[in-house]
Length: 305
Image (cartoon, rainbow, N blue to C red; front, side, top):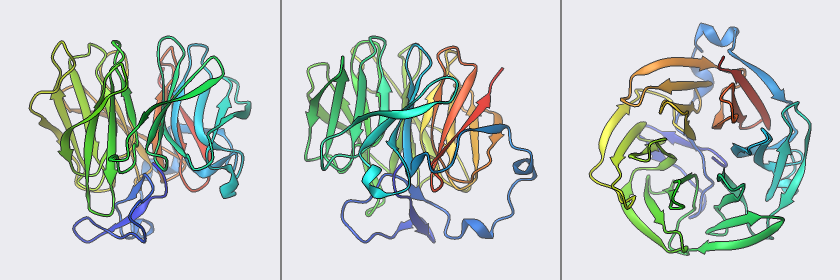
């Protein structure tokens, strides 16, 4: 997410403003830790070099042709915030579009029809971008800062909405006609994803280091949540499911991506070059996992097979 904040002590978030950016820094002194020895031989390689994107690069997703999109393209200056970059499968990066003044994208999702949905955390909107036309699908002032999105096959959208200053958040459900309703109070909600069979909704909480799972009925309404897994250290950020229902979660501050089974078992942990992954995206054929890296504006890539 954007502009990571430092969580000190028992998860107290420090902030200079009422609207914080979309990524926590749950480790009070991450550089004081000895990193996992595997970090010396990372599982990833640098796919897009540092400074290609702004240090608040986020929200990756791929289209059916394998092109990768992420927010805040163009360089390290803040004038590049509010943009969306496109990276071809062979690594050529270019400006794809810009959001209106006052808007800054965070999570991106592209549906089966090729429509791009963009969570705008400063404008309190969800944008719809199709056939070169940008339109506001949701404008909800009650949202603290829409963060990550999860799309269902039926067109219902779930959105995380963290309130970093107050160490809490909300989960929103957006109907196919653009009506947004809060459906649960959470900790600092961040990554959100729907299982491939559309039966489960996963939501993680960055500061609390927990991943929750909600059952979904046929109307895509949530039931009572259960704890899937809780981590002892470092933060949680964006996450995605593969076609088998396994979850890939960015571990902010740890410099890894953890792979979980649908029941919460740790299957593998991939080490990265950088320490601050913000989000992940799978290629259409699930051969590659792309990871946006905060601070240096790079994108790393992991070979999954």
